[in-house]
Structure formats: structure tokens, C-alpha cells
Image 1 (cartoon, one colour):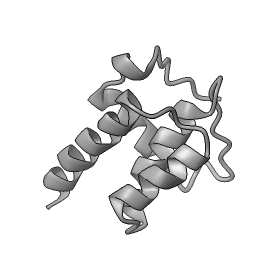
Image 2 (cartoon, helix red, strand yellow):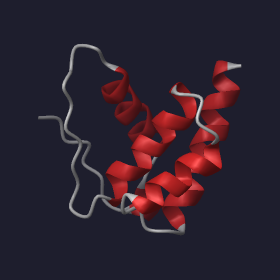
Image 3 (cartoon, one colour):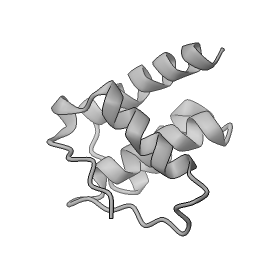
Image 4 (spheres, helix red, strand yellow):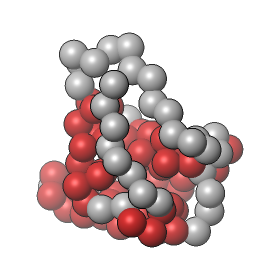
Length: 91
């Protein structure tokens, strides 16, 4: 069990994204069950992972996250910001 200690959409940080992606990318932690109170944060990090690591177009990953329970607004902005930050760092 790994708790990211997330406080809410408005309080998510670069560190939260980095830690979540490390968990999702880890081959040692398979199978992996990702949960949160509403599914919203889980869907957020899953969308970021799908867009970065699985070549899914960003808007398609965000749409998928909405269908999985991600609340619109701050979390969508977080995904876009993190995608830009991490894509730039990798390129």
C-alpha cells in the first residue's frame, strides 16, 4: 500500500505527479490497484500516464479520465500542465 497523501485537486504538485508516475511505471508493483475516494485523482494520474507512456493523444486521455470519474476543471488543467512539463523534460 502506497499513500500519495493527496489533499485535493487544487493542492496537487509536481511531486505528486512524479510519484504517481513512478508507481504506474514500476514493473515491481504488478498488479497495481489505484484507488481514491471518488476515482477522480486515480483517473487523473492514469490519464497522464496514458498520454506520456502509451502515446495516447492528450485530449483523448483526458476524455477517458472524465468517463472514468475525473472531475472537470482543476484536474484537467493539472494534466495539461504536467504533460507539458514532463514532455519538455523528456525531449
